[in-house]
Length: 365
Image (tube, rainbow, N blue to C red; front, side, top):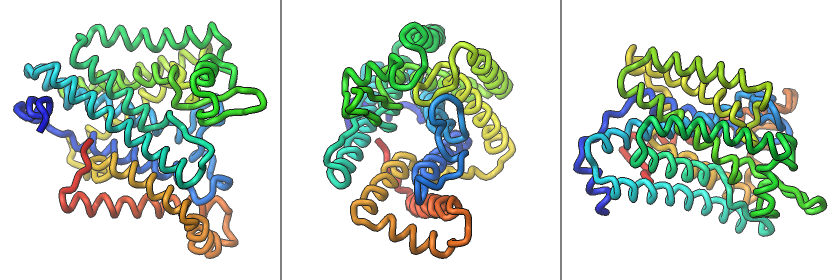
C-alpha cells in the first residue's frame, strides 16, 4: 500500500449514502443506453444530444455524472481533510486516481484506433474529462477553503461566458473553444473538416473549465447532504435552475460548449435528483435501484466500451442487430429495434455488475 493510501486508510471511512450509489448507477446505465443504440440512424429524439443549442434528456447524463463526482468528493475526501489527514499524501492519492481514469480513457481510444480506425486517434474523451475534473476539484478540496471554492466556481462560470461572448460567440466551428482545440490538436478532434481546417471537440480543453464548475457545484450539494440539510439541497436545486434559465438570454444551453447556463441548468436537475434520491432511499428506505451500476461505475463504463469496440472489430455488432432485433421487428418503427438493442445491452451489463456485486468484486481506480 502506498504512503498516501496508508494515510487515508488510518482514518475512519466516511459512511456511504445508498442514494448516491443509486444515482451514480442510474446515470451510468443511462450512459450505456444513449451511447449504444443498434443503429445511429434510427434513434428516438430524446435519446440524442442536441445538435448544437438546446438541452435534451440525453444532454443531462454527462453533467449528472460530473455533479455526482463532486458529491462523492464531498463525502469521501472532505471528511478526511477535516479529520487531519496528511494533505500531501491525500493530494498524491487524488492525482494518482485521476491519472488512472485518464489512462483508461486514452487506452480505450487507442484500442478503437488500433482495431477500428487506423487514421484517427482522439486524445479528449469522457473519462479524460472526468479525470481532469476530479483532479482539480479534489486538490481544491484539500488545499482551498470552502468560501474560496464558491468564488472560484463563480469565476469559472462568469469568466467562461466572457471568453466566449467576446471571441466569436457560440456559433459552431468558429467559437473560441473550437478554435483553440483546433489550434492545439487539429485532425485529432472529434470533428475536423480538412477542407476548412476547422474542428470541434465536445470534451475539449477550454470547455473543461465550466465542467470543473459542475463538479464544484456537486461538492456544495455533497456538503449539505453530509450535514443532513435536505431543505438546503432543494433550495440549491431551485436556485441553480433559475440561474440557468436567467442566463439563457446572453448564453444558450449548449452541451458541445458546456456553456455556463447549461452547467447551471444541468446541475440544478442533478441536485433535484440527488435530493429526491436521498429522501426516497436514505430517509424512507426505498430500494437503491441502480446501486450495482453505481458501485462498479468504471467497470461498467470502460467494460461496455471495450465490448462495443470488440464486437465492432469482429464484425458481430451488425449481424446481432439485424438477426435478433431488426428482422423480428420488421413491421415496427425502425427506431424500436434500435432502442431494444440498447436496452438489452444495458440489461447484459446489469447482469454483469450484479454478478460482480454478489461476489464483492469492485473495480477501484
